[in-house]
Image (cartoon, rainbow, N blue to C red; front, side, top):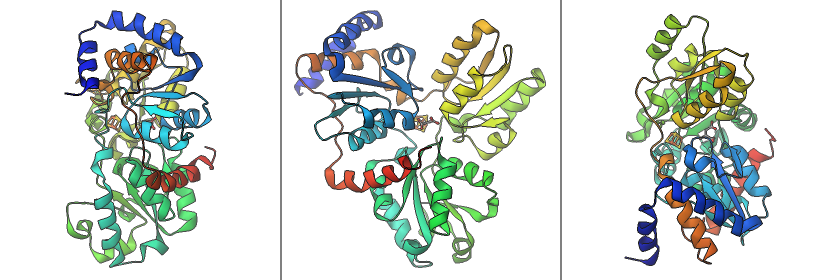
Length: 366
Ligand code: CIZ
Ligand code: SF4
């Protein structure tokens, strides 16, 4: 067993309360050398220590602008990769638990995307007619693939603008890994459902006919977020029956049917803004990750505004949840002791093209 394993075992015995005081002390000692970024889906005991909270877009901009020596990303792996790619080589990106991945991001990998590109080449010339667009929830080598093939990264905040950019360049888009964000955004841009086909990466030629590929405007990777797939149209019907004046807001990672039944659809930043700015006393049904919905409910309770979680079963992002106060304390006290643990470092040959794809997105200024 290596030293860092031993260390985290000692920390995992600590109570949350003890961690809170020690995290504050370590933060104070590290001062401006440290920047803690907290994604909206983080649990409260971790979230409260973030110097800045946001979605992945806002936090990646904050990482890029930061001068801090250490950027501790309370989020999931691809976010820490983005922070590493966008910062100077001497800045260090840290993920408190390296096992905090994203199940949806894992549904696409470079080998499968390269195979899709090869198989598309048998039907069309993808380098002339397809812009690859990856959701930011993806590994760095997929962002690099997009950089190399004239493609771009998007987030749920800027997906529409990114798709407009993509269609200005080539007639089709290969969108991965989330089919729902792709479909929900494409539909809002008036692309008919039959021109958005699903690429099943376990089937030869994505399970599609030559005709389907030729007629498609969007080729959607068959990936999804299991948290957002839990939300069902029935949940919305039940809420509306009980609260006819209530409002429904969903994240575009939710299914097409759920988004179609919702009054509002948008990213976490959009959901937060819409609920916080709504009239006192509004009752909301919210289709996104539980920790964020709980926080919104808490923040708005005093003014009589309610935020209900869309699913009747408790479901949260189990990988986001891996970042706990014990891991946060472990990485911070290690830094105080002069030891970096859980650094996320993207190899430079991957980072270069990934940076290009990210920069194309950041240059849109959305
Ligand atoms: O982009 C992000 O931060 C995610 C994963 C969700 C959202 O809509 O903000
Ligand atoms: Fe990934 Fe879904 Fe978790 Fe977001 S909520 S990090 S998409 S698994």
